[in-house]
Image (cartoon, rainbow, N blue to C red; front, side, top):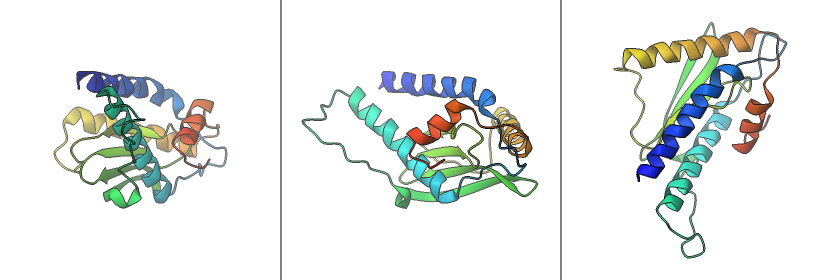
Length: 166
């Protein structure tokens, strides 16, 4: 179990390192919006990948016990949308029975901003550091959406890996 949490910590650290560099936008000032349905599918795909990784870390052989994806878009319990000046910048998606994913609302940025396969997101009672970080994320995505640059190749590839159309 420790390996799994170390793997998640490594993934989060990697995302935190890549995230600021991945905020670049389309050249029309409107960005390239991600629909809520695509964001939901990306969230489900990510958590299924994490669940598969966790299962494999426990030493189960795929040949002995087939692993079916446990989450799909019907596994959603809530979707929150964060906006700035009328533009969606990211979605926070809670899954059933637990887990949450923060997904960029524009292809301009790396798709996954944050995630957990346990607990649920609530719009209240965050640590101040979390709120400050998310305000920075919101501002960076907004600036990227309204800027005049194109998405980084790494961000585009990440969207493709998570089965989201680009």
